[in-house]
Image (cartoon, rainbow, N blue to C red; front, side, top):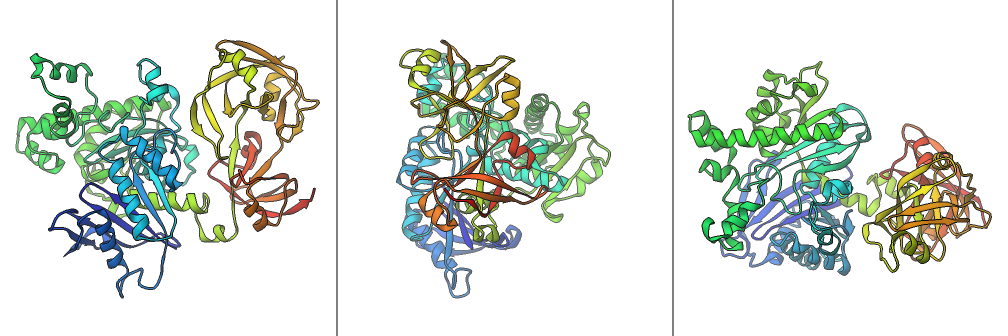
Length: 607
């Protein structure tokens, strides 16, 4: 299963070809100076060394990709006898609609084009690469993986700016975050290295390269990150300012500040600031550190500002997480700068950070399997250095999109069923929506759910039962004819109601309760259920499994708690995507998450 990962820039095309059975890198390289007579193909050797340059014809992105295909299909090359399984594309911005790796079609291309408003330097180029690749590489699946996607589960209080709320709801002005594949890869490597599951860790991941960002990862979920609506916010970077008083650009545009145009201000903040602007020596941290060691004052100051900002974010995210199990460094600076790691960790003893100075100075992640621990053995908080591999993470995400969360050949052949852990939620009627939020109010999309056409709204409601309340309960749109509340057993006990186990929509004989929204309350006399565990599937899926609508099947969960689960209701529709729904109680009992899969274990009863 050979998978090609593409990262298309304005004048370059980078690629990595993987054998996904083993995740072996078969070939990697790039085409540089695309659009000029001096275009070259650069074949990169093992560990990034031994590059070989060859002139190629690459007048545009399509020409560059054709050159890549020709090189990979040569008689002695990896694709000489084997065809591609899929192509993965790195795309910078997916907005609020594209928050998972997604198979590319015309609709997806349209959303990527819309998101160019937030990433005008990147998304148009990414899209041009996608369209060219779909021509060059023929009829294979193409999957987009987004820099913003890993941060899509940030809570609203972390991503909303203190601006008039209409700027968010109507124009999408909010914090999105970037470097998602790198932060995701760091978190996965940290969990594997520490011998535990990602959902048991609190991590602060630091991607430090030409662009820099920090993420707070709470049990596998990014709950905050330093970059914002654009990559300009946050840490000091190679040529970007990072955090800045927003009045400064206004002053720069005024006569007193020089009367700079918006384009000039953009260039100043994004291309002439950061380490380069402070030091006057360019953006290469190695050059700045060498100058600082020679005693150059501006170089020293640049490093001090860089470290100060980074340490401040690490401390803030430790407070947000309530502590940290590990701080993870990666990227060109994070992996290679002994100085930065030492200075950042120097004053973090109160967090349980205790750096092994000697190991920090000598150990290299590249020499020890890609991950090293440079903390003292007895330190409470580990300090890890990871050799990040964003392309490998993108390849994994492509496999997850096409073949399920395990992305393993044996699981693909066994037709795994992905899991959607169904937390408590409400389906509202039009009348009840009006009563809770105001007449005619249209609830706004926060994120899509697995089933096509359905989405979680930004708005929530409170549930009020005889014995207690549950606040901030999710609403799933579109609206329905009748309000329905789906709970787990623990929710029902907390509220003091006794709902039956039911298939969605079958509400006769079910209890009611009160719902509270910002505009008022409603009391429903029925509609509260414990959702019967069920699996959605398309007619094609049903034929593959040999089941029909309404059948009861058994499924098998593997892993730490192997178990077989019965009474799983099959629901078949051409509108459904394959997905098993379990409530939180059932999922917790089986140690399953929304990244798990289960196997079909046979038909239990037919309707």
